[in-house]
Length: 340
Ligand SMILES: *Cc1c(COP(=O)(O)O)cnc(C)c1O
Image (cartoon, rainbow, N blue to C red; front, side, top):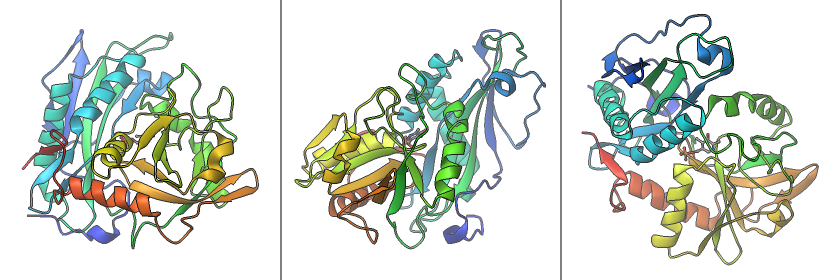
């Protein structure tokens, strides 16, 4: 029986569910892993994650399609991305096929927390891994824990996606040859100061520049960016310090193969921002969030699509991807993982 939750109003907060998946890495290998109802982690005071932040994570959703199935969107890409994150952080890879199986197990065990179709709510899944054994000298830990918990989240936009206002940040998020391209907790820790400041100044988000030249647009703290040109070409910044968003990669495919639009991944200069017709942020949480205004050190760039609604192409992209995710539009092979 689906839980009696006020799906429209739960927001994006942690709500404890019944089961989570846990697997431990010890003596050079992963155990089989199991579901547990225990949400508490007991760690030694010198655990690697607590001292040197050796941890990475993923985020994806389970939700109901129009015909009542419970599905996940491209979980194999989360598995692959987590394996890339682990390699960069000298953590053991959790096998990608087992990652997808564990996602499935957690969703099944918490099936009553998957919101009904049409509520806009979903069951958010948080796979993560951290160093659990003692370190004090700086080196990778010997033992790790991989977990997936689930928490129901409400519709990202209550009453429609309103355009957001962003600022060009004076802080940097990722260095060349650093960790910007992996989903490491440390990338988020250092972005908190910048986002709190941006919020205090009345902005919803930060646009980070490439830290080498500070002339190119990269992404926000937790979402990639797409732009639409006046002749309806969909472009996205090319950089190896951007986290490869699964939503963004899917949207670029949708633009080209479903909407017949031209697409391009290329460097996007700060100086070009005034030339675009539309701009939007993309990530699992909101799918697409339109940008209405960009503030570059006091100079305001107003996107022609304005502060009231999504631009035309953004809206088409949004509706097509949501249609694919919810089973109203046929998905490319392998995009939808049916769980129940
Ligand atoms: C997770 C994340 C995104 C969005 O990726 P999705 O796979 O689309 O959810 C974008 N940027 C950063 C920095 C992220 O950590």
